[in-house]
Length: 200
Image (cartoon, rainbow, N blue to C red; front, side, top):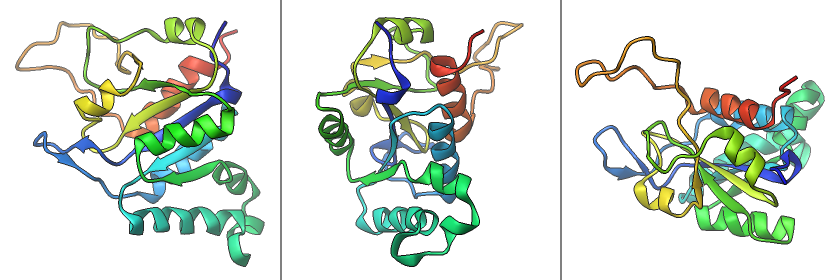
């Protein structure tokens, strides 16, 4: 029994997330997040990548960017970069995390297990080997933008992965808690490699 890449989806959540002042906000879509996470999803042969945004204009923008590279309505991107098309073909756009879970459930034929990610430590966090080897069936890996998923969003997930962190050679202190601010694109690539990378 183990997680299978072919039945795992990634959701990039733009709301609800925190800003630097711990306020709940909706963040703006970025072109890099769309392209780079799609490329990681395709490289590790995951089922798909869902962009979660509550604002209709932002969802339309995401769809237009994806459509440019998949040849939607005769858009010119697909013939220019076949590798980009192969990645962006796996992008879907939804309005909410619940909508993302429903999309995956319909595509997979059963409810996915939601697995959250966060840079913030948690006593409930599970290791990568544990998650990879103890779960099966469809899964939705949930990543947050901004300063991370809200507590409500984290609570909606059945499991929480341990943070991606560097090996510390000295103890952290209140004055020096250690730098841990990877971009969501970098964190996603590391997480996917830990879960689905070649371990030989």
